[in-house]
Length: 279
Length: 272
Image (cartoon, each protein chain N blue to C red):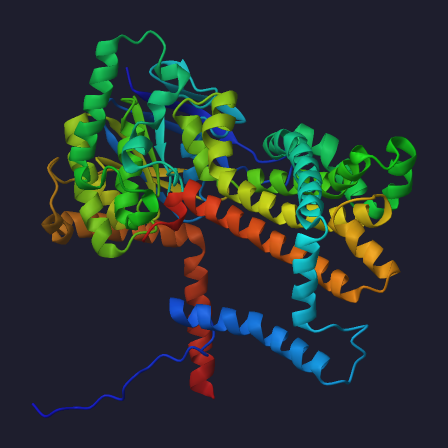
């Protein structure tokens, strides 16, 4: 059985009216256990909305989304989310941020003292995994953007979620930091064996990280196609120059250009150039 | 390689949004505080104005000293501070939970915010006759006026502080399984705390304003009353002294709130 199942999912914001374009329409996707799926598409294609429905932060208007066979009706600790930024608690140290979920009732019911010890050990292990043991007692605003996102990832993993949802988590980072984060998240995926759904607008990022890349298109938001990534499971930065990688990136970029109206912008640019030559 | 002399770049402190050193800050702060005093001393010494209307700084400080040793300056200050603290605490006790509820729950916002906005625009001073009819001129009258003057503003400001909690902080807690009560206690309150302390600091200033208003019209003790009494006897030096004293107490309270802010929220003031 698949980990996450999405069937005929639709989403309309506000009141439905005849000329209203749905944010999502007829989305079907099934994600396997321990899979790393990336979702990419032009802005307005509904990729973030889809992720937020999986997190339970938005409700779907039609269809069904389920996790481990249970229909998703609201947020839950088994579906953790990493946001683009500003989600850490600035008043808590790095360690307390990671342990935040331990304070919540859902995670404290039926706990023995050995569980508490195990949790404390897990927080240490996660801190080690993200390489921030030295700054355990620092506050988030003393860390760089990349370090903050690492803490956010560790915090999301703390409760051993069934699915890790990531909404453009590296979108605000510089290119060098992003590459480091890519290898870190792949490493985490191998060690933790989590299922990851990762939304991005960066095609290269989507191919480098994903086992499958889901391409979405806007108006209405829908899945255009799903590309299996023809790269070995163990990725490294050199693969970005492999012909398979470049071919897939070119193909996906073409599809995005078709759907996002960038082609029309190109027409406009050509016309302007012609005008300029005439003058 | 030949030496290339780059022009020495010394960033001007007059550039827009420029940084200044701590020493420069204190220099300008002292300048801003001392200059008015010098101007005041010069003006009153220059026989241009009748000292009856503008006594010099020296006379004012002499008067404050006499007020302290011969009259009851400490008693007047104490009773005024008691009234401010009582009125302010009473507002805070009701405004904090109410503001939190308005900021957290949309139905409560719709229920209470338009009403609060409406009452807020009713001038607190205009309630004085009514308050005197209801409570006489006892302590409760003064405290009520301070309450009316600060409570409604405080509610709206606290509600806004809570509303400004970043959505990502709330959603992160939701995806970790927080329930409503945990959300309020562990996220909204913690996140809004520094802003709420600033709100308290600002409304404390307004509480002082309304205290003096209340003491001017309905009192027989306190700093405001002393100012009013001095006017009857043309003791302008006492009026000046009283006003300066109230300003100083206000400054002191403001600074204590700032100190408390730095003390309570090290994560906001930490080195980046």
